[in-house]
Length: 232
Image (cartoon, rainbow, N blue to C red):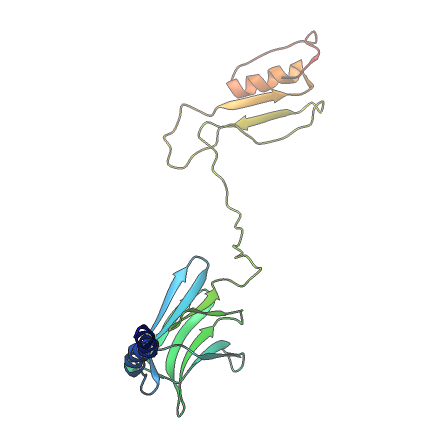
C-alpha cells in the first residue's frame, strides 16, 4: 500500500508543476504589432547634452552618421517602431554642438522611427541603452580636446585711490628726477591738490633744491658751496 501511494505522489508532482506553468504561458503578454516611440527629451547634464528616447518595448536600433549635405547629423533608427504623432516634431536646441532634434517616421513597412540630431560640427556621439525601452544619445557641448577660447581684451586697470603710479622711470646715477602723482579718478571729489612723490637717484643737491623750489613755489637761492649728489 505504501509503495502504491509513493508511486501516486511521483505521478502527481509533474502534473502539478505543469498546471502551474501553463497559466503563466497562456497569460504572458504578447506585443501586438510594432512598438511606439512615446517620448523624446533634450536635457543638459554637465558638459554633455543628452537626448532621451522612450518606447513601449525593447529597443533595437541602428546609428548612421551623415556628414553631407550639411549640417552634419546623426540618425538613430528605432526598428519595428512607430513614432507617436505628438513626438513627430523638430525642436530647435542651438546649444553647444546641437542645432536641433527631429523625430519622424523613416518608413512604414517594416516600421522604422527615426530620431535625427543635427550638429554644428561633426563630433563623436555616444548612444547607450539606459533601460530596455530607453535610449540615451549623448553629445558633448564642446569639441573634445579643445577649450573654449575667449578673446583677451586689453583694458586699463584702475589703480586704487591714493596709489602712487610712477610716471617716468630713470636708472640710478643718471641725474634725473622720477616723479609720480596720484591718479585722477573720474567722478571723485577734487582734492586740495596733487600729491607728488619725488625720487632722486644720483642727483646734484643744486638740482634737487631747484626742483623743490619749482614744485613748492618757493624762491631758493644757492651758491657754489652747495655740492654733492643725493639718492632718495
